[in-house]
Length: 197
Image (cartoon, rainbow, N blue to C red; front, top):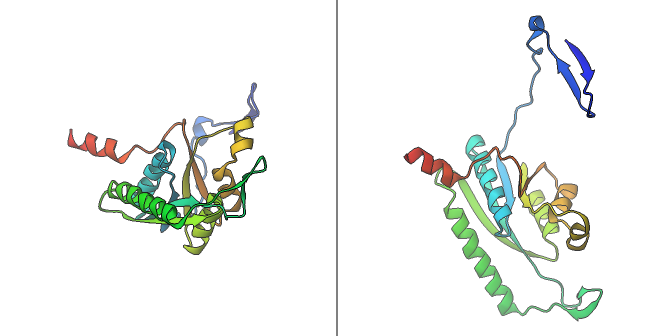
């Protein structure tokens, strides 16, 4: 066996000779997932994250919590430094938003299939990332799976990234599912339609 640097990249290439064609065995840590948190904002990316969460749950016999965070700014907080008007949501509006989010979560939960324990929760907070981290800590979750649109540059600076902040502050590992990537999980609908044919 010999190791050499690749010519055009920073990668290291491990070349095996026929006589030592098998790497020496190493002990791998046992993976144990009991609770998976999947924050959703009802976007295409969060649906993809949910599919990943459900797939992991099936393989590890884990429980999934679908979490939606409603961001309500305190009455004294301005919308932005350029706009001095505060965001004020009355109790009826907040209740209507909670009910709407709960209905959408219930619909997504019903798509999960029967063998998986899927719960749904709606939380309020000033920032989505803080509520996600708080839920993960309080619920002692083993993994957070969330989607991101993968914004970069100016859009990232202006909008901020909930996924990035969750990764920085989460009490457990985080799997970020991007919009365009090579998928290793197929959707539950695709799998069930293939099994029927």
